[in-house]
Length: 123
Picture 1 (cartoon, rainbow, N blue to C red):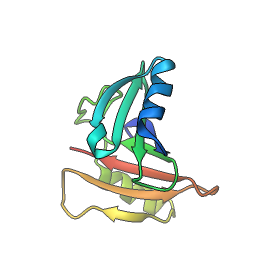
Picture 2: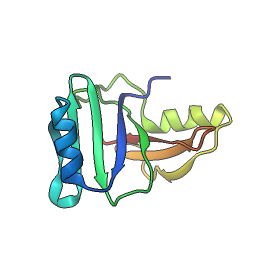
Picture 3: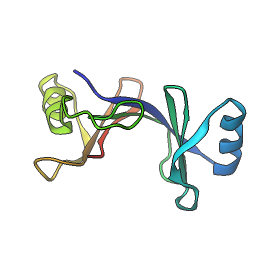
Picture 4: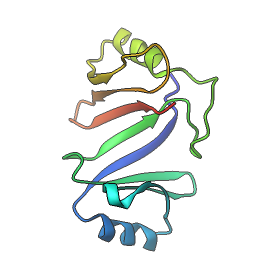
């Protein structure tokens, strides 16, 4: 099963302090809006999202139909196909936002250690 681009979404306490820390490690701002309390940062193929006050814990994130440069890849499975396969595998899904038959959608699964895994399709 191909899940798309991978990133980690970090629940940060101070967006500017986290931004400065990751910039010191060679990351640059790739997207997001600081005024909306989130930034997406990139260092080579590594992507991290910094989210202040949006959620309580770190989240492993996959973006179906995107590569690591956020280019749309039509030949990858749609989030609804991934959701169906995950359910066939017997995994419980949460926070489902799959109202339409195409386009954006998302759902969460939780690994055995309590780590949320977000499958979040933007296009």
